Image (cartoon, rainbow, N blue to C red; front, side, top):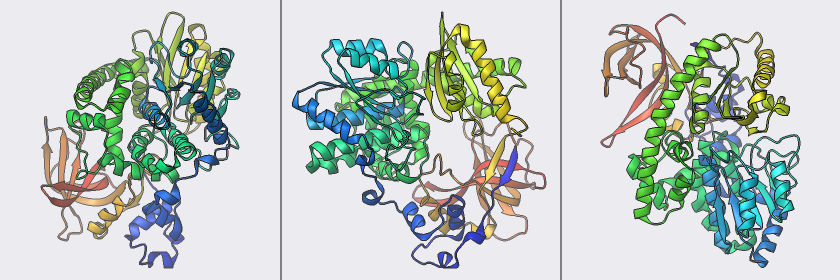
Length: 575
């Protein structure tokens, strides 16, 4: 593992900035902020203390938002029924619920359609549209999908259904002829931030609904921010700009959520979230989102949607128990498929830059997870597909050096359907084109990665010394939260630490606990914990001198607080 220390850029500091009492931040925090492109007093204040009223953009900056609202006005006058057509992941499910709540607040009759991952696949499909028309619906609003559905939107128009698209995915060469398209990635859309999640776009649409139809109730929209936080973090968009504000306030709402379904999920899953146990983005990423996503992976995403929308505590409890069971089964299944795919990758793609596996035995539901785990492990773009009789469907996960959706687009003539982001995408392809597609993708990826060192690398934000680490630093680190994509948790380096005490702890002694002191002496003793390290660092012993990479955290237990290093990596050799 290569350790790479970022430049501190301390010379970029303005002396006034360092001495500005109104900022009142540890100097190392200021260094981190400057590294992240936040370089003046106003930017720092906005980052540390987002303001909901000032930092949330006007939804009508989207040029086509007025068009969308005009169509909704017609629908209201004619008592039209509306379908919200969503996606089956946490971003799509939270998006769909936000639109349903907003539309019902105005008085619309709303049906939510979440497609079946296995039988329908991602996005609009002709069978669903025909069923929607048959049931008397005349307006479809997509959320977290639709921008790649040119043909399906045209088909809907032919049978009398208008479509409004709200989406955030990559813009294909040809876009649908919809009533309105609300997507921040559309060129000249008018919106100043292009990295909203699908749920962020849905929230902007809901804002516009409230302002257009029920401005006297627009304060109620803040209670939707728990859903916005979940979907935004789950979809791994950058937590900067407006996203940061949405998630920061969304976590506050999540800590006091009124949603019975979420409350029951927390109880059943033993997720400690309430007003006294404030959530962070990590709890969404590793505890909430996987449970929501488990539904589509194992059965149908409708189960997760129903849980989030449920008002009855009894029914919510049953749904939460079911989801917990599905998540447990999903974990076991994923572990098994990752193991099988890893063996195939090692046997057939050992020296390849692109791993491409199509297997008839792989379940569609876990393909994205498997691709993600392999891409993280092998540091290569990975595609995992389920091969069926005539077509294959699959998921791609990439590495930062390869924009996978742009790469796929260069091979789009071989595909039935595709869509996604820079780092994650999905395709449907006829089996007869599998080999051609792989060869073309491989050539493009080989060309882009030619001569690059793909060895695993850990970026180090700052080197710290014993004197730097105190309660002020840890408290000020909290002001940088929420951490996530675009604002990752800082990784620190401390050199020449002596192991004073070493323990293997936890069930099965999987976790490493160290007590360390600086080699130059002094009274400071640092406590470090490394989770699931039982297969590494077994040769460490008391008295060894190490270099440590770590995150800094505040550990709370029985009302007392202490500073703790969370181990990222250890090296015993000289750096």
